[in-house]
Length: 159
Image (cartoon, rainbow, N blue to C red; front, top):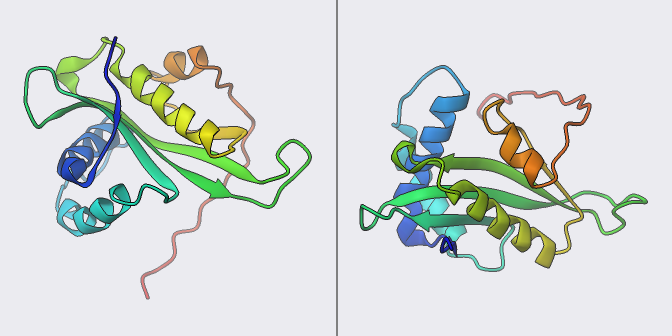
């Protein structure tokens, strides 16, 4: 059995490291980690808020004390209700990553199960995520299905 726990502020640097692993495996582009220093204070504060809308679930690295083997992070969002979700609680998974040296051990699955339970406890009836081709079998085994998504994105310039 894999021990999964909710990440704390002490895990913030490792959470960012695993986020970078995910970014580099999914997106080509700037591999810079300069943004980590700017992100760290905000992430620590979010990890310290047990009642907030953000959570990260992690598995400790079995061979490196203080390091993490896997991560699943997401937010609980409010959207105006509709027939199949009258209270409007929707989970959004945005970062799942496993340390390259600890893959294929069920750690990402265990982290996802922890995050999904956290969403359930908060009333979410839908959970959304974007899946890479490599990760799709994991998500499908957890019950996720592809949906036709008309998503668009606007990048706002800095103020």
